[in-house]
Length: 172
Ligand SMILES: [Zn+2]
Image (tube, rainbow, N blue to C red):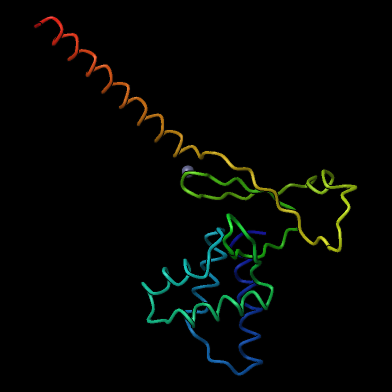
């Protein structure tokens, strides 16, 4: 399913809940849902608040409550990364893996048809598995080329310093 399609499905679920509970339709709530579904990254509620306060006059409490609502509706899932509670869109596919750049945090998602085979025979203790997601950490191509450029620059600087030292030596 495409990103946009998944967002439309999630939007429909939220709209139905809002209508059934006679809640007010707010653009902030939709914007938060959109942030999760279109950016495909995980966010802490604080990060969501930081982004939303630039666009709307919202309080932290409103944003946190909205994140809780989306979580309650099963539209986002809760994960723990580096001792931080983060939330991310709940994707329709049951199995996928993602690559995470350890420099810039960019995530890309790939479907993985045989991922569950690797977990065959795993004994879960008092736990019912619902979804398997694997993360592959590394460096994305743009961070990679940035690092290469930086290294070349430093090498050039080193060569320059070396030349200066040589000149200095000759003078003495
Ligand atoms: Zn990167």
